[in-house]
Length: 81
Image 1: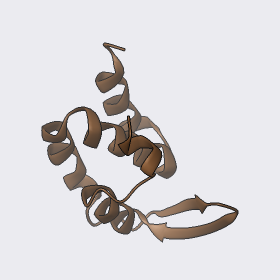
Image 2: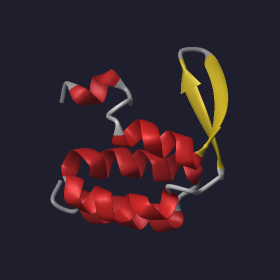
Image 3: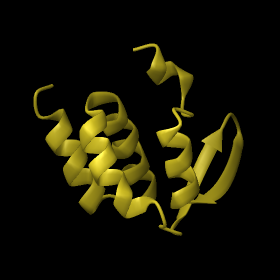
Image 4: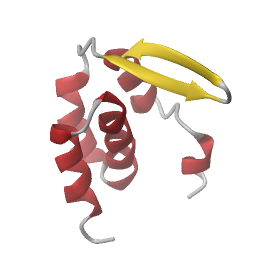
């Protein structure tokens, strides 16, 4: 929807660590320039992020998740859209 990018930017400020990761993935897809600007604040963030792959739950620092997002390593379902 037209407000999606604005809403994801707002989520970066208000969401928990997992929500911020989702917002970064969305910005990576919707507006790579906005992503590049916004991601900088998370590149050294050591906040614990819970990740789920299949039935396995793991934890990584936000900075590690950001590296994966920047490299395009996230849910392959999103890449087909």
